[in-house]
Length: 380
Length: 78
Image (cartoon, chains in turn green, cyan):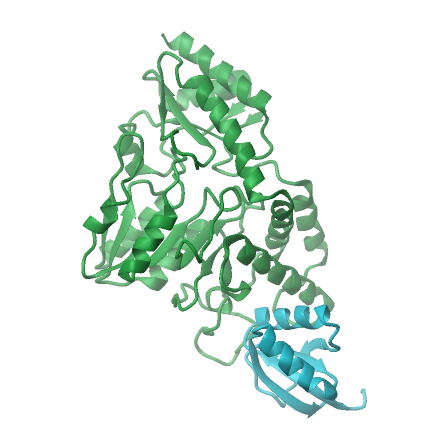
């Protein structure tokens, strides 16, 4: 099997990730629920994981790293906890439904949302943020990189715009955490939402949000915290404020091991390898007759994603052929990115997405190029 | 039961605060350990750092230097 669906989830992880999950399942008590050895083992690992994430993203402090099940949960917490009826939000057409649906719900509850449009290559003009500004604009919520095209948004520029206009800046780093540099301080990010199971190479069911200094997020869920048990309301201090209920300590132990591997390997090295593989594929398919590739490959900084179509073939059919004949795993269809498919004109056909991780090889990529070439020839 | 002796007890607002304290103390070889908060003290977090009574100065300095999220310091019999 050649696994090229890493934008959905990475399958191959550093071997120490699964080992850490297993060891945690054999030894962890409940974090924050006691001072016996087993509970403290969980608490220590979880705290160290907060420290590692704070270092990776330049978050203000480990206590501002709050765990959730994934990016979607983090984005729901951020949107519902920062914004309210009457607020206006600027987003983009590059977004995943994990951003869009919380924003549509906000709009249905009396808020309003405008979207910076993209061109046919999925690019946005960052100058368009200013044209959508209103007196009631309260935040920009956008992705760091499109999960469909791999195009990267210039979050430093957008963050500076937010800072200049007093707007909150919420970033969806689902496709970039661990694979591209992110600096909450320099990028003026107020809330960074991430998932653990993609480019962070951790287990599914891990993720979180890093909350900037001075940013007050109302809790989305309330309940047991191991602190202030006689208070009828959710405790105020982060991270507990956003973490009611037992944390996924076993998964977070795996994420801890993955982050240790990322620290050792280096984000720049990871990006360079993944980017080289994606560009190798792009160069191999972009001029094949009948093949249409989507995205801006003039960008120097990209997520390792290449989406394409072959003639007018259904993207699902192409993906199934790739899997059945060559054992190549890709993702067809809409990719939970409806606005971008509409902008690219692919809402009917969908697209076939290829996405890489550290563990893919040049040989696998060559095999994928050859498979696309064969299908393109057969389609003519 | 153990004989009660004087202890310095440091309380925290959150579990993360307690973890940061333990890590900082271990790094600087400051003696003590995490224990359940005794009933004589009201604290947010259910665990506290129990240390020898003569370690107040070193712990206070550590709390300031490392920006530790401490709720209070108490001298009590434990």
